Length: 382
Ligand code: FES
Ligand SMILES: [Fe+2]
Image (cartoon, rainbow, N blue to C red; front, side, top):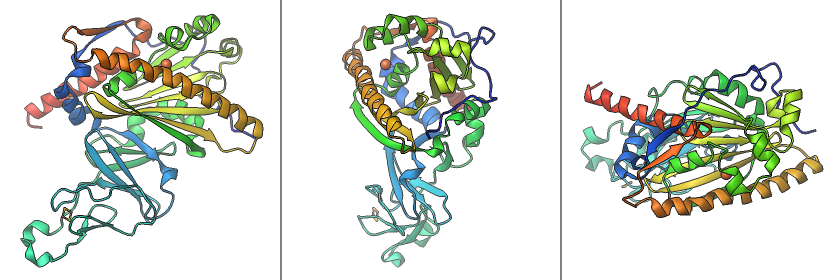
């Protein structure tokens, strides 16, 4: 038996009476992708203070198992505590700024900085200092590396790098619609089949854009004329910061018209603000996760999740589909070389989007609003 996600009695999202969110055509200035100062504003006001997916909870199953996450200029260590919860702290030695833990690993009891052997517990508290008496005691008393806020949902470990209490609770951030619709896949019961990583020379938002529209599919992925036609009947929705689209390809459209059980029939896409896009096929799914490195460098991760099953037919067809999808994603990656080639041009001014690409300016405006709001707050000293 293989689990099949289903709408059940959840919200109907396909049918003549279901209106799309009316996304508009729009533009985005080139500098939002190419300006290093803009990237620093995004780190401060968008990426650091909000929830992001970091890794799978199953990757640190036992006490002391730890995961070192690095991206957007930060290094963080997450550790499974004895009570099963997960702790996270900035991986920065409070002595002289060395990284404390270099690699992910298993079964740690504490962490020791390699430079002068300062010792940390799972929460980042300094619990041992060689020759402690030689320090100014007021400087080392109660010293700790800053915490990050950690949450779990859908089998993913989420974090707010700015620490506890900055973002709303994780479930509030996700919102009822995402919890209901994406939750139907029961990702907590899936397992990580593979993670594929590409290092690319583009801004992280180029990757968010690439998976936020269907307009490129005929040119780049050479899909069939029928799929081009059916693709125009996709449904798109905006949920607060997040968004969703239902893409009825490969014969899904007539099935959906008969029985609008979108999760079990169509490809469903979920943009989880600010840095993840799920591409959910009924039997397996991908998370596309750009991890920003700098304004023009990104680690692009594709996480492939499968349902647990010993059904040979399921495993076989899912393997074949996943191998095919890796080629398709490789086509997307290939275009980013051409985006990288123009990124320093003085003549690259702006991107122009049609209404069916409307999720893209919607996304960028969310980013911009947070920057403007954050700057205003800082200027007011709040
Ligand atoms: S820098 Fe970590 S112990 Fe000195
Ligand atoms: Fe694509």
